[in-house]
Image 1: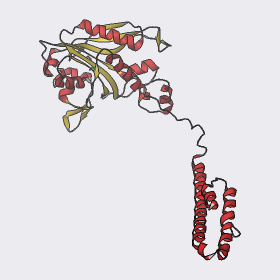
Image 2: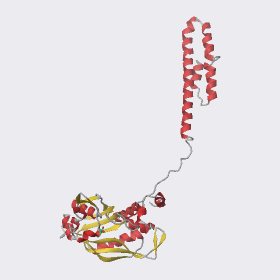
Image 3: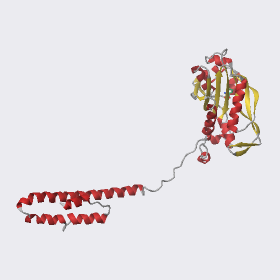
Image 4: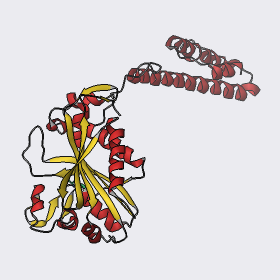
Length: 334
Ligand code: PHE
């Protein structure tokens, strides 16, 4: 009976120890052989109990040996597959954000701090949202400003040429006060070169409320360019867009030395970065907003151009070629 206790409490992960244990109990000259041999000499009245005890001992010993061997094999397998589990892991390659996303996120963050939300819309648009609602009726010559990709079979279906289409959708669905930023990809049928592509990215902004004035627009743009480019000078040049009146083009002064993100960048003078203006009353009316009560301003800028400026990218095509050597350079940015 003491043997049963000993067998039950035995444990080892060592092959030799386990083998010695097996030989001691279950071997040719092992204890169990001895006990079975001694069976004859046990008095008849004790035979039953003796037999039971010896059988239990045999089964316990056999089970023990099997269990220990199995445990050893599976831990050897684990070690083979995973190696030393206490070793530090191999470093994981972390990707980088695309420069377009970096700039887009920065722009939307700057405007979210003054109460603008983000709105999105479809890249495949209809004529109404991309042109007609924006005061650009059919045959209006200003449509030529934006060379458009049409779906051949249906002149009403096109790839949006600007995200002003999202602003139309937003005004149709929401009454003022409206403060919204619409980032997205846009398409124009242009020859591809280092400076132009047939698709690029925009962020457009819209603010509609009571008593919104041109002064509000100017101050908002000054706030934006300061946050985006650091202390900066801007100038507004009169311009024309069918959906705004008056309209202006915004230039930012890229001084000879500008500090951006602690880096000194060599500038080239005045640079055009966006279009803007007071929303034409016709556009408000087309979108179900009463121009007698409300006024608003809108602006739109190209993300690609700004990303190229900030990160000194010489060719717009690099932004869509997905060359890993290019993309890797943005790892430290976030
Ligand atoms: N939608 C114009 C463009 O794509 C930009 C713009 C937006 C101009 C809003 C004025 C007001 O060129």
